[in-house]
Length: 307
Image (cartoon, rainbow, N blue to C red; front, top):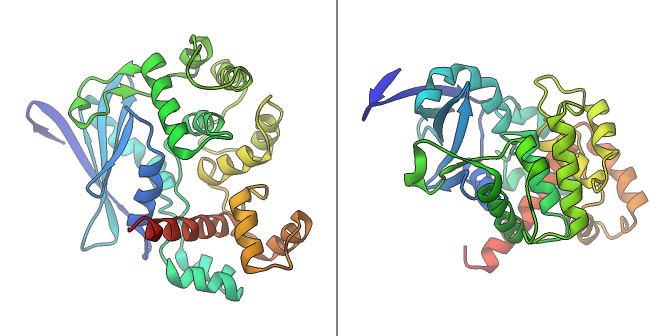
């Protein structure tokens, strides 16, 4: 623990088994960063957080010479930094052994190409399952950019001001489930049914009926509970399982981009049923298949835009 400019600051190192593709992970986080709460700047992930009633500014970067991430937490919340280690390891997928993924998927010639092109690709996690579901409901049937804009509006309407990190342009804490459930979300930019789904989910979490952020999630139970809520379908459930619950075999089979990517490379798999059968051969690493396919599309789009 140090005191810098009158603020307590603590730091820790999070080791990982290489390779880890930090640039692609930050591209994923940066493209989906919640406005006012998190951002990616110059190779560093930043977000506000509150612990035990204290504020903090979290910063995570990759050590340029060693196989570890460097974590820094400024503010009074820094006194609890050690408690965040498991959470951060999940968020940045540091417990995965890339060799196990390669061994599991490398027998498929098509996937072997993707594994070779991005050997350190991980499945980006989420700081909070609640935040992720909120963001995912908002993102239904709109672009990533539009979802980011609307999520930023939600934060400004219902979040709480952060004490210290305004200099980074992230002056808010993400709203609580209760705040979202009870907010007036008129004219926020979403259809009424989606607003209702959003607030119903927040109410269920606020009332303790859905433990979306359990440290030891029962993924079978959580899948059933989440899928039973109005406005939440299989894609959302599997996406949350990938990122928040760290299920390496989660598979958003109805994702249009994934389906099109598979059909382009394997025309004989044009139907959902044939794709589902083929995907069985990718168990128990289907979440990594999804990330590699999404990443391939992102790489192609990046080149098309000039990098």
